[in-house]
Length: 394
Image (cartoon, rainbow, N blue to C red; front, side):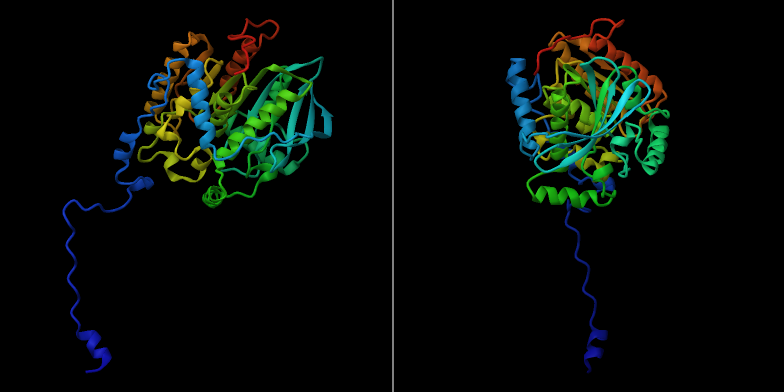
């Protein structure tokens, strides 16, 4: 019998029976492991305010912030900023500046700053851009790029889609606010990312002892400190503002930076367990790496991190039809936040809303209401006294 004949005559081996209770497949739709409900049940968030044995709120805030800092996987940075203004132009009621400065020991960046006409120092807003899987523009999503026609065309399309055709930074500057916008790593001047390459970036940063979310959090802290150092800015009246991923960055920076005294966050707040459900956008990975601090969920829920900002004024807004967040997740987070601010007798400093019929957008109407809230907080002329005015740095 030939070798070939031997192969042909060999009887196929019978299929092995599947043992009773055998786990298969290893994952379900959306990338969730089959045992995800068991893992979720283990997330009790023991460091959350009210669950933690620490009953003194300032002591809890210090402990919770230190826990978050530990999970950033990126060390603090005190590199001198060494700023340089390379361009300044006059606009309608304000000046446009291009500023270079050392964001960290690793990166010197080009930022956009708008400064209102008139005598300062001015109240200021740190503008934090969204993700949107659009990497050719970052800071230009919020400040009109006067210096680049190609980016201007891209930015106009973006603000038409997300902001009702309005550049949020330019509108704030016309209203008397100084603003600063910086690219996150991977966007605008620092671009080079694609949707698919985010996983490789995350893996490589993890191997280098860092993470995308931790690096971005540190950079946002540094941008807030830079803004507070400028003579044109009133360091006691600096807010953070962002949409989508920028909203996450806004409340996170308020929680981690003493320079940020208030925050406006549009379309990013949820409970973690309510987010980890089949079909949720975060389950696709990729963009989630910029909002994921490995291991932190063993200690704190998402709104628990935002609660570190209490009792600072915080304005949260979003749409009822936002496809990125479940209604249950938003309400669970709002409920936690309200309990924290209430415990500090600061209910008037927290604004939470869900606007009916709106999706993942920050419309001019939403903006106008948020800007009015900022004016009230800052004690602008003709506006009521702001909640928490002259709140000491925390």
